[in-house]
Image 1 (cartoon, one colour):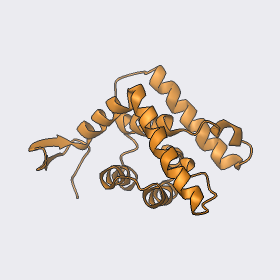
Image 2: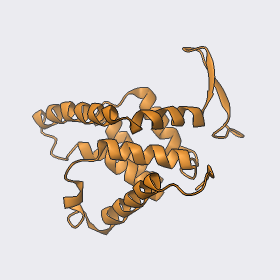
Image 3: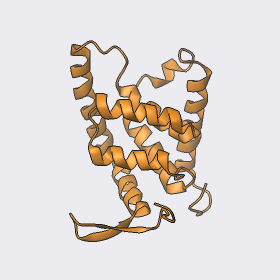
Image 4: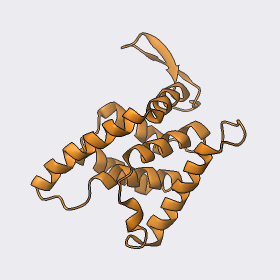
Amino acid sequence: MKGTTIDSKFYFQSIDHQASFRDIVSIANAFLKDSTARIYAIKSLMDRRGQLREIGCSYPAEYLLFDFCLAALEGDFLDAKLYLAHSYHLLRLDHSFNLLLSVIVTEPLMRYKEVREFVTLLAKAIKPGNSETYLDTYGQEYKRRYEIYQEELKKLHNPTGSSSKV
């Protein structure tokens, strides 16, 4: 919607409350900072991974959402949208969660600190344990994106400034 910003308020009938996209991202960030969120995310992906192997899917499914995060952090929104579409169908992402991620890569929201933090925390929560072993295997594009992710992690641990834009 033209004129809509990260701070525009929307009414949510299900909870009879108004909230902005920034409010939603702030709540999601608080959830992802909790260690139980990582456990929940990993368990959900592992459950689905077993089902995908049974039907013959050889691509490591746990990488789909992680690759979405890496592409979004890099600013390659076409790749991010493709990874998200595959994640939605193969991992059976919740519709509302998929919508949230879609808005992030469809609208110019990655420039906001809170949104970059959310995508970084999501990547951290679902990062495959062996992702670093693929740095040489998957080539320069993956290596560059992984380095951007590492830089974003450093920003989380050493925040500088309080600006809401990156």
